[in-house]
Image (cartoon, rainbow, N blue to C red):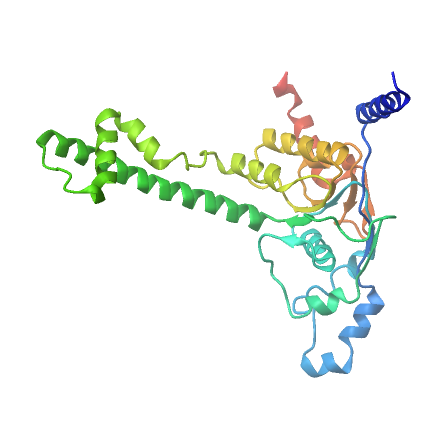
Length: 323
């Protein structure tokens, strides 16, 4: 066997062994730094701001959120999770990171006049050898998923209307053919003749199916459609920010999504930053989890998170019912 071929086989074998032992985890974004307390104070007390208004937590968004939590910098892993309750700032953090990195976005978000000014104080560090986030990197939010579900529904409803019209058309054509009311007068009516012959030699269902041309999207539940949306939007070799992707998903589909994301990071060179309180996603092996309910914000094992502990205590209290 030629030496070159032996070398190629050896490299291929090594690659297979690396994948079987956990894969090579690729990372693009190393860290992100939010505006510091002094940055925010200097901006909000400037003469320009004092001339405009007295800013509080509500009308200074996205200022005056993270300093109170002791959050200034996030260091990322191949899978990083931002955990926290409603109002903890996890979705805000994702949007800030996405805007600073200029990631693709399907659905718009609630921007504010101060967002651009806030972003001026933010910094990020890419990993060695990475010059910019890979092409295709994106933030995927619940609004994007919801828009997709509405699009699917609208398309299928339009097809349903078309199907009803074709059913009526078939019945009228067959009745007309029985009565011999129609005759072709010239070649301009050739297509109509073909349609009538098609109706005569087809069953109603086959006629409608052919005329629809196989354009109908498969009908799924909202959860099933949402899962399909993630598998379609997440490709290879990219950075993805996911905002509460568990919305609409059953427990089974959350478990399948967790496996899909883990495999995408492990084998397909993806990096994920996810906001969630789903125990299925929080329990992903190797995920780095920041607890945004804590002050200061710290990285914690998933088993120490309040939401997960609540589930654990619930099942413990009812353990006898599972026996």
